[in-house]
Amino acid sequence: KFFSTSTSRMVSSAVKTKVEGLIKSKPIFVASKTYCPYCSASKKTLDSLDADAYILELDTLSDGDEIQAALAEISGQRTVPNIYIGGEHIGGNSDLQALKSNGKLVSKIKASKL
Ligand SMILES: N[C@@H](CCC(=O)N[C@@H](CS)C(=O)NCC(=O)O)C(=O)O
Image 1 (cartoon, rainbow, N blue to C red):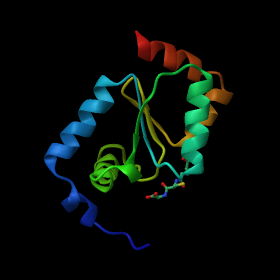
Image 2: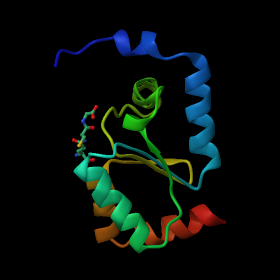
Image 3: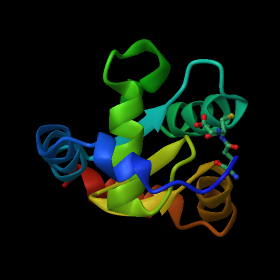
């Protein structure tokens, strides 16, 4: 796929503000797609740690593409899952699994609940 700057023109300020608000207000925010295996792995990991994640399944939302474009602007990441814990950008599933492996995920989840 060719690099395109058109994503920025797709994003309304209303949607960008909405996404920024969710990232700030939800202890754990995950942008996901129902058919994405990396998303399934992340959701399973968060579930196993009793993490109460707010999940948007972008492929089921009418403004899902625009939310994905807004996330690309906000986080510099276009792929799903796009994970935030305590307002901090974690990254994708590989980043989440790395945090789990190095033992830092549980404390981040705990801190996000405070
Ligand atoms: N290394 C990434 C892989 C994520 C990935 O490849 N996700 C695919 C969906 S399964 C994606 O976002 N494709 C582009 C899109 O759906 O717009 C991770 O660990 O999260």
